[in-house]
Amino acid sequence: MKRLSLAKAGLAATTVFAMTAPALAATELVIATVNNGHMIEMQKLTPFFEKAHPDIKLKWVTLEEGTLRQRVTTDIATKGGQFDVMTIGLYEAPIWSKKGWLQPIATDAAYDADDLLPAFRDGLSYQGKLYAAPFYGESSMLMYRKDLADKAGFTMPDQPTWAQIKDLAGKMTDKSAGVYGICLRGKPGWGDNMAFLTTLVNTNGGQWFDMGWKPQLETKPWKDAINFYVDLLKKDGPPGSAANSFNEILALFNEGKCGMWVDATIAASFISDPKQSKVADKVAFAQAPVAVTPKGANWMWSWNLAIPASSTKSDAAQTFVKWATSKEYIQLVAKEAGWGAVPTGTRKSTYANPEFKKAAKFADAELKAISSANLSDSTLPKSPYVGVQYAAIPEFQAIGIAVGQQMTAALSGKVTVDQALKAGQTAAEREMKKGGYYK
Image (cartoon, rainbow, N blue to C red):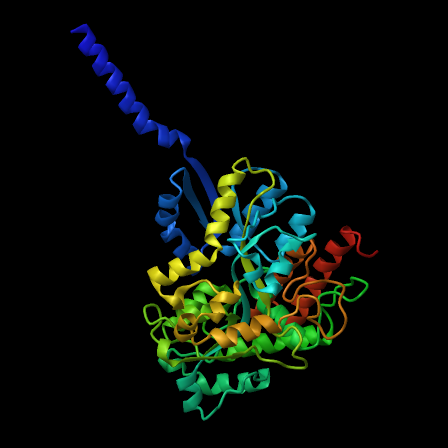
């Protein structure tokens, strides 16, 4: 009996070990990401990754855009170690890689970094090494209801002027039917309302800083741009525009409540998807509108996966980042959700794929917008900074947030445009002087 008991005990011990060993061996990656559609899709595909890599488990922290930026910036600057993989923007990547805050992405032949669109690959590299992998890239463009434009007797040019857009918005607006001529971001944030507004300032001939780094918010281009924006949304925008960001406007557009929308090209895949959009068969696309100059009229941005330098789970993090930004991942999304749902703006091979081009009627307009944006030459007067809808300096976050709050206040009627620009100028000057850019 004793021997039998020992044998049973031995068997039980073996069984316990077999059941618990994988759990002990699994590395948990905590991934901070933004609550955009493509990231939500990535989370749905977690089982595919975990099945292929049973030694790695994924834990998602999904945040609204502004909150994400605050959390990851604080974490990486303080070496908090809260996240193993971070979703960061084209703005942060070069600044953080220079500071030594990020690990280079260990690309290999199978990953095919040469397939990445050069504009984004270069923007995410420092001293010849890739420091963040692009998950999806975007520019901005005009998305509009062709049926409403036709009804107004208007044929959209490939790149309309803002004067034409204002006129057409008035004709599209039918408040009794809950249809508004144009929807634009109003929610404050350097990557929120200021992303759009900076392109509007650029095309009006303005800039954030002159060659001496002095802020330019009280110049004529800024006044022209912001007055135009406030007047346009008050007349032909939906109620509560001051609270609207990308996701709020996406919902409005999909419900048929927006005649036009100038925003991220990535929105095109959602508004042309009949599963999400009631007007999917009525949408068309054009380049972002222009005013004084085409320079800087459409932004350039990518959401990217990066690994903090302090990460203790580097190997697992590298494995995940390369999986989520690979050609194979794009094929997986296409298989599971259709070619119209794949993350775009990152790889040449996506745009060369006939199945993608057939499913994505926005593909040509999107690629044209991305290809036309120039991070190093986005303003009519010469500027000392790199970036289209941002200036790639550490101080810009604080400046953009402060100015964004003022622009929202002007849109909601709490202050005049001149008051908002004066307050923004004061805040910008304070930050730039503190940063030692000028006295």
